[in-house]
Length: 132
Image (cartoon, rainbow, N blue to C red; front, side, top):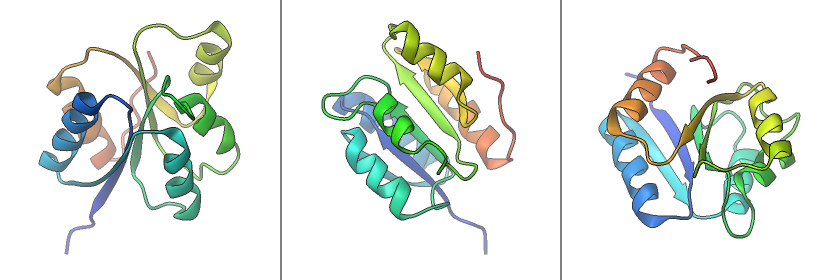
């Protein structure tokens, strides 16, 4: 039996969250999706190792993706994070994200289907794409 891959999506914009959900599901991932960083943190910290990849919007009301990454500091256990941004990050946040060992990609909105499909293929074959 094939191993089931899992993805977590933390994105406050409904259309983008649903777009990512659909792409993950089409590519064989079981998906949990939330609209705030706090439930993402709860899922990631209460189920260590259960997600193969997590998409975190860097700017969300409530807890941001940055807050979630900060709270998980030292608890990542090899997780792969994809940070989604609208194109603007404070310098401090940008430096933190770029240096974070578990952030494998920074996506700027808008992004297309092929970019997400490539990331998911890389995750499926355990390749770590280089940060850009």
